[in-house]
Length: 162
Length: 162
Image (cartoon, rainbow over all chains, first blue to last red; front, side):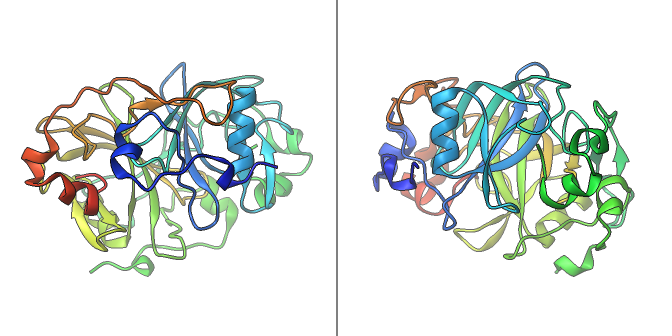
């Protein structure tokens, strides 16, 4: 089991921001936020977290693995739904505490547990009050979550994405 | 000053995931993670956090405001550097605890405090060990951080992005 301190570390800000040493800064829970976009469309598909083990497996296999905070378990994307993610490119940000993955999807190409391509299927109206109504955008379902997860509550209760 | 409980709330998962009520779920620190992409290129520019006040100001003005965790201060993007962000679209995810902003940049069109367009200017080699060397991609500087911030340490020490 890979731990956070199995990765290189550095206290040198210049090295961290301008160097080639990959020294990921896990947060106090041992996690890194991960932004996932479609290599095909550029859209943001989902947002998740990796612990050291999920990051190590993602790097080694090229298949996206995450840490489920709700289930407290390592999770290979698509292990239940068949909607896996092949990592086309993985980037780190300036201070190496966030990751960006560009992925190709398999299966129904749906990243969201609701059956949609992206978790971001509703827009917030701007220049209005705080209680504006959300607007659905690109919200077509690619699969039926009840059929895939057996029971909709299973997905809703324990799996944010799958 | 807008607080988290000034926004609508709901305990109904179906309403939260399938409804039109905007009921953002702030984390235990009162923050929401925010993914920021370029409306022009689709690239991920940066990752930041909003508290309730930053979110309210962003919605009301259409200009991106964030909460700086390091400075513990509200922050209008570009107030120092001139690289402001006009929000073209704001989306929320399935369970309303993450935001995605598509933005148009002003000024030098640089979102990163290092002077680059994006904070994500280094790629992590895949299918190798954990200590692979980062590869610089699209890493040209749009501005000189020392000239813009007066002293490079000011940016590095207190401002992740500007």
